Length: 255
Image (cartoon, rainbow, N blue to C red; front, side, top):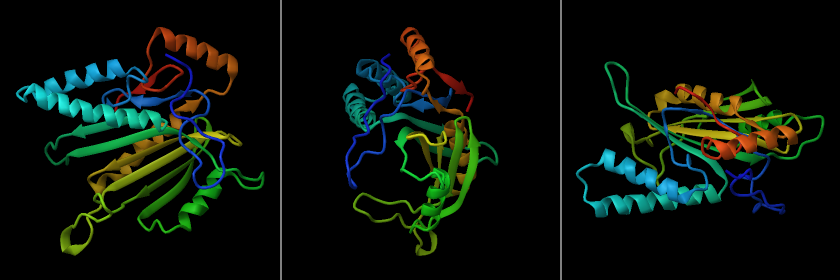
């Protein structure tokens, strides 16, 4: 598998600058038991074949035309994510059992270009201040933490569920229905790029459980900036296909 990352961070000025994609190769720390839409990297044929097998297992009685329509939709989504620079899009679906409620989580992972800062202020402090002073009133917790690359910033919130066009999903008592959200950014001090993981759960009460997984993915993943190490990892990746977009060999954990 090629050593370049999907997408690209363009050197442009103004609000149109790309912040996702680009940067050095990434070695991701991902669950082993989730559905990752980008597991096949830039191999579109392999992705299509995997989606076809999956749909046959999930909907064995659906007509073939229905399978093809869904596969085409998944391919459009997968290609858009890959082009935009995402490295993973994982889905975790666990049915309710006993007193445990059902869980439906989605997690996106990408390399992120970091804002420039002076030596007097580290990036996590800057972003913590930006988040705390923004209009993101759904944020309930912002915290700095240690990661394998050095520094990290985690956020938890309960944003309203929105519909296409900007409306919200009504909930009990006329209030908007909310979901759980967690994000984590990991990076080395002074680095130009970091790894961003963002997760959403349909059940807002699962926000902290989701945050633990998101923080683990971002905190244990890393960008390979040492050239000899990157070359060794990329050579290994050509022999054994890593997790989607890792570009530097797989590491995984049981979710």
